[in-house]
Image (tube, rainbow, N blue to C red; front, side, top):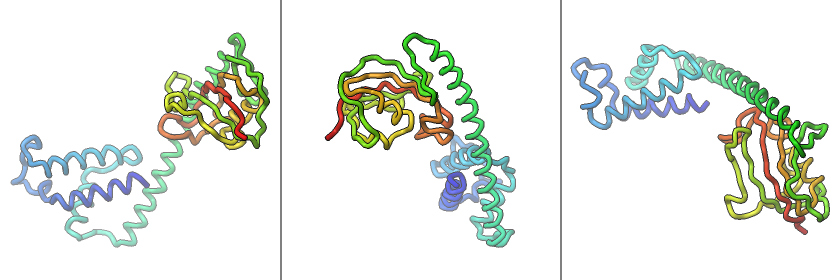
Amino acid sequence: MQYYKKCFLVLIILFLFNIECFANEEKEQSIEKADLEKQISYALGYDIFDKLKETFELDPAFFMMGAMDRHEKQPKLTQEKLEEILMSYQRLARQKQMERIKMEAKVNREEGFKFLDENKKKENVVTLSSGLQYKIIIEGEGPLPKATDTVECHYKGTLIDGTEFDSSYRRGKPATFQVGGVIQGWVEALQIMKVGSKWELYIPPELAYGDRGAGSLIKPGATLIFEVEVLGIVE
């Protein structure tokens, strides 16, 4: 797990920077007046402890005991037992992460449902049986793309709060991709959009990235909005 790897890295750094400074009473000096190595050691300890507490309620005394024993190479448990415990920690961390994602997805789905429920009442918004919603901005006069076609499109993607997460306009170059190779909401919409069309799509999570999310901005269970312009079918 990421947290465990980070913890292990910090313990190595603490070893390199000599963590006896935390054990010797005669070295009880102010952090503000300590040298940079000691300040870094303190900052890393502060940071990693806070991060680890997100998945497990750590005991500070036993945490530091483990760090000191690692430094002095005098473990109180066998390597086999340590590995068994760390495996248990990783399972617990995964479980807590899944619970967090599930809860986050539930909240996002509820917000998305409310948005779509209000949005479908707006003028010129069409709701399909799949749950996909769209609004025609410009109706093109070209051919309809098929799932096997490759199309060239300009697009902008935002969350329901207006946060932009992707834009070919911002990159200054249209995107090219196979119609059947994108999220389901796009697959469905592109096959009813004539070349030259510009639509605004409102895509529920089931037709987007579901509860897994995508990247740092598209959270689990997110409803997405896309402005899509079909420029042409690539021969």
